[in-house]
Image (tube, rainbow over all chains, first blue to last red; front, side, top):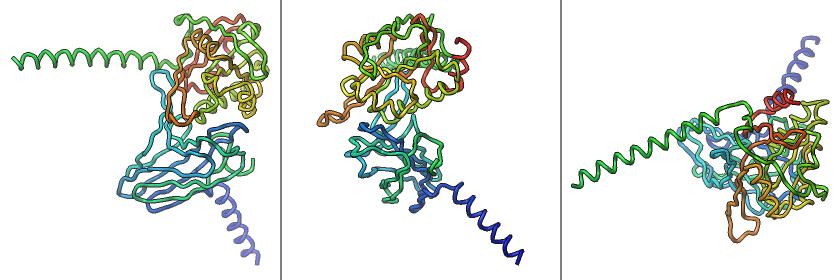
Length: 157
Length: 202
């Protein structure tokens, strides 16, 4: 009896640790694995927002992210922030490639999904769906977690 | 005949590209300097006449007695500007008691969209010490000239009145309690380094 209880305890604790340590927002579509999808919380009157994530391509073929769709804004596009001779610029990146066996990181100061014409505030702790469209892999539906900034777990802190 | 023209052309191209490469190398050497650059090498005035996010008219003299951290951005920017503002918040928190001696000033390069109300609402998301500054297009131009900060409008969608972004200088300017420039940090400087250097001069 004691052995079974301790066994049960062990499994429960492992499962608890697993569920809190590993972000639940990991989506696999074909060879694409999308993790850590988060968007920055916005001010009440903000018209734009940004979302970030990591896309890994474990396949043998290159693929491209060609579009992103969401209902939180009038326009959803792939953008890139870049420094050019001390000037901060942002450009509409259009399509971005995810090379075979490689990764594409969307992070502050670099590639990001830009929401233009936000329909409502992105509130901290909220979640909303977003569809990524890949040239070869097709569509992937992900859940975006609204946070204050990077590196925060999407649990209620 | 053509051979000679070709050779001359090639030589010129080589000379030109070498010159260009040298300039890029030179700039990269300067850019890789990780300490805040002493502003004595860059003459900036640091003067301005703007409106803060509470609707008060202010100038650089308003903040005399405290150090100010002046940086430029705009609220329509969802990526870089929030990151800088979060970093500034981290710096202010790390300064502890000394934070009272520092005033972060966020100057918009997009006064058309960033009214006093928009600035006030936007800044609620960030550290309470950050002051937002806006004003007329002319006043903003004068302020940026005074800091030698560059900015320009990039139109993305001509059919959308909001369809534009701003390119802008990404430096943080530190001014002394006498409203005179001391040094500046380039974009990407970590909050830890900024805090460390600020503590040295406070």
